[in-house]
View 1 (cartoon, rainbow, N blue to C red):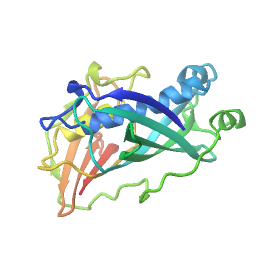
View 2 (cartoon, one colour; view 1 turned 180 degrees about the vertical axis):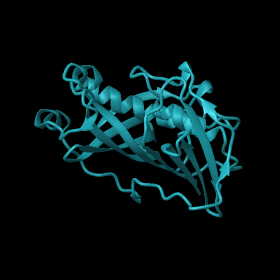
View 3 (cartoon, rainbow, N blue to C red; view 1 turned 30 degrees about the vertical axis):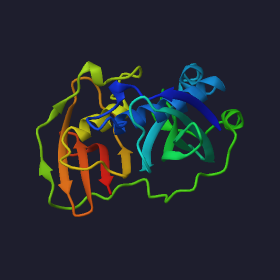
View 4 (cartoon, rainbow, N blue to C red; view 1 turned 90 degrees about the vertical axis):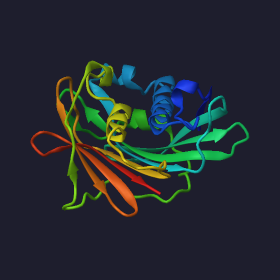
Length: 235
């Protein structure tokens, strides 16, 4: 297991002084990237071979959100490789080891020259190794979108602040943009995010919101009715 420690910053919290969902995702993204870089299988090393890991989905379970100034440990561990897919768990605990937030993530190993998934090389698998899968209620990667009842909302234009070093909208930024149109009155405890299409500077995201009895689903669509990202927020 690979871990880093941090102290929750005021800028990472909401009006209840609790860590925000985008900040949770940023921590998980950072620990996964640090882990990959430190073992020589991260973006910088893979870029030389025209390869990269691309995030496909998150499933996050919140037990209790840490608050401003709390000290926490953020950890990650890969548990499975299948062809071009790599799965890893992430978690936030307090310094006594009490679980606060846990997650599953699915990543695709990509040939960025030909823009297609390729089998994870054995040398990359060996550097990561595998650990025991975290105990949680694993959900499917794909999020079912209702056939009707969606509310079409004001389009969002991708700006430079939304982009990462690869030149497309960062996965955490997609979540921030989707949350900006949420009407939930209470924080979600179970969150799923499915990423389908990359978005670039100037692209237009068309939000569609579905308010269901037990959850809210927000779809960020393309102008051609394709899908960039789907966010599911449930109790």
